[in-house]
Image (tube, rainbow, N blue to C red; front, side, top):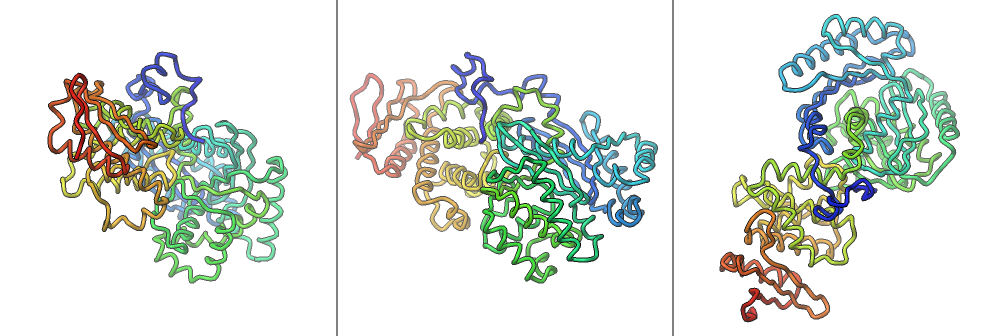
Length: 526
C-alpha cells in the first residue's frame, strides 16, 4: 500500500541507501516545493494552506479556514450566497496579504462547485482579481475528483480503492489502482444542496437514485477500500471515535468497518446534536451539515460495500501539491522522507539514523517491509527531540509520534513508533499517561517496540561518525543469546551507562548477553 517502488531507483542508490533510496529534499526540483501556498474556495469553506518542510510529506506551515457558506441557498436563487460572498472575499484578501508576507512563490487558487455553477460566479472571480490580484481558477467536477484522489496518493503512494470527497455542494468519486487515478464521477450530493430539498422522503429518494447512478458510472465494483475526504466525513469519524471511546483522536488514517459506520450513523440520528457537537469539538456550521452527510454515507456504504473505510485528511489542496511533484518524488515513501527531513533539521548528528538502522536490524531479521519502514522512521527520529527537558523527553517523543502530521502511518503504527521512541529515552513505560493508547497494539508488538527503543538507546551511546558503524549486534532467538561485537575504535565508548543499556536490551529480549571487542578475549555479562 505504501512505500517506494524499487524500479524507480538507480542501482547505486539501492546499494548505498537500501530500499528507501537517497534523500531528495536537497534536490533543486524539490527545494522549489518547500513552501507552496494554496487557496481552496469551496461551497462551504474558504481555506489557505501553506505547505512547508519535506516536500513529499509536507508540514502545514500555515492553515486557516473560514466557513463562508458561498453555496448556501443556491438551489433557490442560482446565485452565490450574498453574505457568504462578502465573507469569502474578505478571507481571500486576508490570505493574499498573509502570503505576501511569507517567503514563498505565487499562490494557487481554485474554486469548486459553488463558483462554477452560480450565475454570478464569473462576476465573483472578476471581483477577486480586481480586489486582490489573484486569479481564481474554476475546476470542474472531474478535475476536482482527480485532485482529491491525488491528495490521497500524497499520503498513500500505490493506493487502490475508491476515493469519495464530499464538499458543500457536490460529491466526487475517483477510482485508484496501483497509485493511479482512473474513473471519476461527480454528483450534486453536497449537504448544502441536500438541505434545500425540504421533503425528507424526496431527499432520501434523490440520494438513493444519485448514488445508484454513480455506482453504474464507476463500474459497479464492490469490496474496495473506501477513502473518505472532506469535512463532513471527518466530523462523522470524530463522532465514531467519541462513541467508541477511541483513545487517539488523530483523524488521518482512522479506520472504520462498514458495520461500525452504520452503528455510528444510527448513534448520530438518536443523539442531541448540540450535545454531540460540544463533546466532539465540531463547529456549529459543520454540525448542521452532518445529518445530511449521514444519509449519503449510509447509501454509499450500502451500494459500494467497501471492505473497510479510511479517513484521509489529505484532499484537493494536497492533490495540487502532488501535481507539482516530479514522478521520482511522488513514488517516495512520505513517512521516510519526512523523518529524514526532521533528522537533517534537528538531530545533533544528522546521518546517524541510517547507521543506527543497520545497527538494530539484526534484532528484526524476519520482519516485514512495512515494519522495516517504522524501524527506519524511529531511527531517523531518535535524536530530533534532544532539546526537550530530559525529564520529559520520553513523553515529548511519544506525543510527537502519535499526533504529528505524518503520512503513511496507521494508528497502530503511530503507537509502535511512539513506544519505540519512548524507550529510546526511558527504560520503563509503566504508569505512563499514554497507557490507554498502548492498547492499540497487542502485547507482542508492544514488546517488539520496546526492544527497538532499547536498542536505539544503546546505539545512541556508541556514536563514532554519522556513517561509521560502531559494531554489530548478533541475536539468536533459538539459543537465546545476544552478542555485541564492538570495533576496537568504539571500545572506549562502552562505559558503565552503555553497559547498563546493553543489559536492559538483553533483558527485554529475554536473552543472555555478552560483549566482545574485535581482537580481544570474550567477556561474559553477569
